[in-house]
Image (spheres, rainbow, N blue to C red):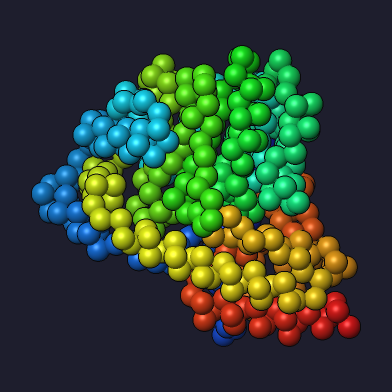
Length: 389
């Protein structure tokens, strides 16, 4: 027996490989500071947990509608309409177990061999993985450090073609923490509005921003009708293990995604949806506190890493990652990430794991305690004598 040919094209996330290595070192008695995983270290708020427990206690452990409970979809639609200032209804909403199904289902429904998909690079590795799995051609657009890690728009213009079927945007971004400015979004909208393509707008970090609120491309004329908004609960409400996300899209596509849900997951867990309803409708003070603390940590890690010889660290505008340029160390970023893990006991990710234009950078997640962040910076600073001497 052999695997299907498509499996040779599918990728993975380097974060989980590094996590496995880090845990193996811990099993040997090593002290490791984990800055590799993009997961909030805050607990799921008590009111959300209680809502999930109540739902389980009430017997909501059975199948539910494939697209999600109607009342939950209505709540999501109202939230999206308010936060993006766009007219959407529950018919535009599909509830799914996490954010990745929206990526996968959208591409399954829209993209095939011979098609091209534009995506940000460095970017979330599952984008390229799913593009390749579908047999389409990945078309990377560099995110430029001196533009706050926004698109190189000239490259974007050149790489749009009659074969482009999807454009992927993410703002704030993983791994860079960068935002796509409104002016850039307006220009992108002008370039794609009259083309036969769909925009997948990954807005999973939409609530985690600091000085400038991120904009959605759906606010520009003609774009709501050809955009898929991907959002969810993992990051904003620290619900990574609950597996709860959603897509907001044109009705014809929502119907196709619902069919794919029927054929794959059947539905999203009912008690998880009830917890999500509480997350959206309940108090938001936990989100406010989390973002304030993440901002404090961001400032500390940026200041600390900029003191490390050979590091140049931009101040991210959102999410909870820093993406320092390490080319001045004279050490390849992959080798440097391994050295930082094995010798300093700090787990981090080689930027090349996020695409070719991430080479020369390293990603650190500051979704960890201030104490651990300062300890990590101290360890890296002490290790720097290896390349700074």
